[in-house]
Length: 182
Image 1 (tube, rainbow, N blue to C red):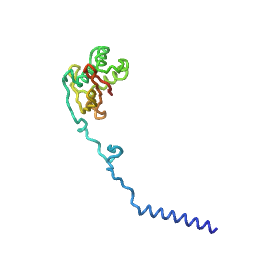
Image 2: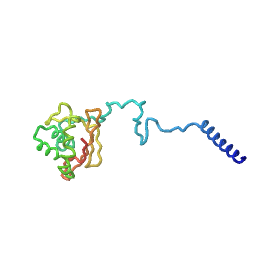
Image 3: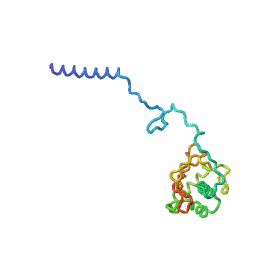
Image 4: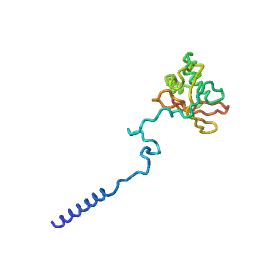
């Protein structure tokens, strides 16, 4: 009986030491800013943080109206123009598909991009845009290499993000869409 009593005393003693240590030891503190979590990104899960203002959504805000035909913006102009077109469906689609890189089959472009492009085109062009006069904004420009470029097209809808479009220059020097997310 005596051995059992001694084990209980040791057990309570260890528990007591642990409780004392827990009470007098200050809590761990993070050296990082609580507004930023993992990879330095803002903590958007907290209700104490006010929503980001919509003013800063388009850093560059380069308005494109009549781009030169040798510029990457011309390709995007053609893409939007075809999506806005009142031409017969097949003719408008051919114009649309022409701006894509040869790595994409036309059937895949039709399936993956065409209907979404027509549905969302007004989200990315100005209200006054028509087939012949497409107006849009480039919010960010990332030059990935000498022959590859990613443009972020400004969204008119605060619920949708700016649309990334990746373009690459062909051997003939023409810009073509390689990646697009309508």
